[in-house]
Length: 76
Image 1 (cartoon, rainbow, N blue to C red):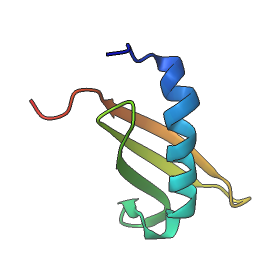
Image 2 (image 1 turned 180 degrees about the vertical axis):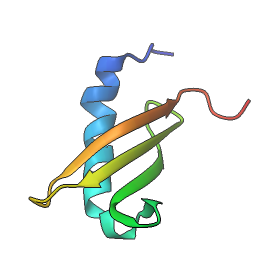
Image 3 (image 1 turned 90 degrees about the horizontal axis):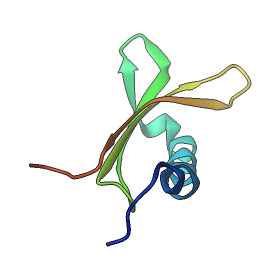
Image 4 (image 1 turned 30 degrees about the vertical axis):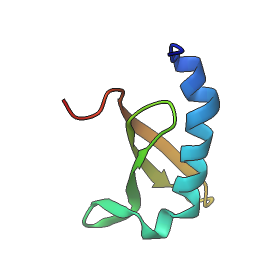
């Protein structure tokens, strides 16, 4: 098996996650009950088992992703 690197994740996985987050923002679950501008996405990946991303809708309608948590191995 080929070794995965942070670079691989940033160049291959993260752009796909960012696109999915932006495309489905309104359908994603809110992080805070009183703040609809914060949402999260839990997704499976090609290079990682799962990724949890938190993002915020900014005033100019762009989305800032932060709080990325990565699960490399899946259930134990």
